[in-house]
Length: 605
Ligand SMILES: O=C(O)C(=O)C[C@H](O)[C@H](O)COP(=O)(O)O
Ligand code: SF4
Image 1 (cartoon, helix red, strand yellow):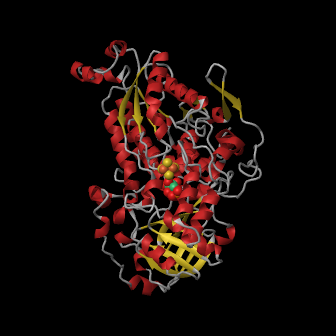
Image 2 (cartoon, helix red, strand yellow):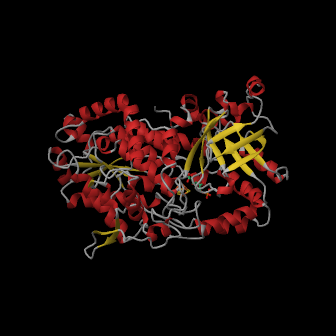
Image 3 (spheres, protein in one colour):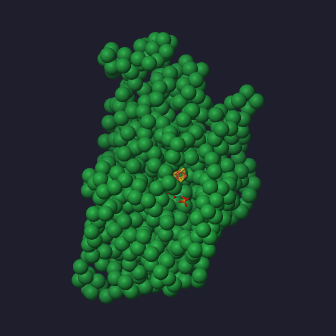
């Protein structure tokens, strides 16, 4: 089935725009591919080091040139509930590899930051850059060149984007992403938010708050809201890096293990040694990227992907823009209501039909390209399934049903929750920004109110606590961009802004920083580019200026006389407090070279 002509047109313009970089990338990638085992280019000394700790059988296999070797890149640590299950995956993967006559070795580990642990803390100022550090760290593992394919064990926010950048940088290798799955459902996300707002108002204490938080985040697996981590899972499935149906199966279940073993065997089946060679750099093309953006809109995915997807695409020589993302938003409807875009969580989404049902709806409308390559083979239609477990412990895939098992959570294409998708670009005399409209009530898509200017999250929270914000306002929290302080998520502002909005005030946020993918109900124009520290217009706003955020027209403006505004000096602030402490001094070089948000805020491209 061919894609909708509008989808085709946007895809075509991305192909045209990307030609110079994509052709150069594909040339490099094809030259890096080898006919036999990649370890064949190593000298004996290199190879002996590479298999020194292997079993005699594996040594003999790796000394030869017919057995494929699988590199494991593992983002395991105990900080991320979503990554903790990966502690045991290497042993499972090695065993599955041996069952098909292959070998698997851990090529390397990568760091992983939990944005939940660092939210509102100094560590959050390292978070965005950790994506590119993860890409570099994975590159270190794969640079041993012992491998004929790779599997990536990662789930969360900056980790999957960093791993995808690495996978595509080693685009001559087939790569399969193996998730660990969502935490089982705990305290509902909207109840957690209600307790947080009560705490922000001083109506409950720390004990009640910690009890609610602990009931929400209670065990292994990805947090169950639809933030960046679960947006990553959706992307890996709709872009073809996951096995069909792998995204939202809970950890520690027989089906989870079956999917992990299957992914291992599949990775070994698609090396250059077989007849289904699927190098990631060729598998992922402009159509895969467009499918990812469409999935983001259809599910109300994380705003962070207006940067991560751009950086991921760029790693394969593909140039994606905010205009592409915004134009696709005008075409693709919202089909999922998962917190913060609703009250359900990802377990409910999966039970309602999950990725298979979603992809089936998007294919029916021609909103995604079916003619794409995936780790599973050819065609996205193969992903319109539901995964189950066979009696022999293997994965069974049944066609997705015609109807959603819960139309309040997952809608058919004929009856979407919103006619357009989750993410819009805003432009105007303050520069460019993005806004997530899927979680904002339609009556709040346009906000015009006086500016209240702050230079840190703490400043705004102090003003809230002092009762200075009981009015209509647009909070401007600036000097939060990549070059200023590493572009932290400002998700801690959500409870205060939510309280004021619930009190009936018209409120909005404008910032050159980021929000969490879990942020939602307050209209927020984020990733404002150029950032304040680059002298962007946001640095000229004064308290009391009337601002207008219009997600319908796609505009972000300060309603001040143009000449007067242009004549204003850009404010500068002392950022020395952000230069030291909690490792921030190590990231000073990255702050200096970081690119702008609308190009992925990367230090790599
Ligand atoms: O989805 C994203 O982009 C995130 O970064 C989610 C963060 O992990 C939040 O900080 C966790 O949610 P909270 O418990 O509300 O802090
Ligand atoms: S989803 Fe976010 S908060 Fe949850 S484990 Fe992953 S990084 Fe941490």
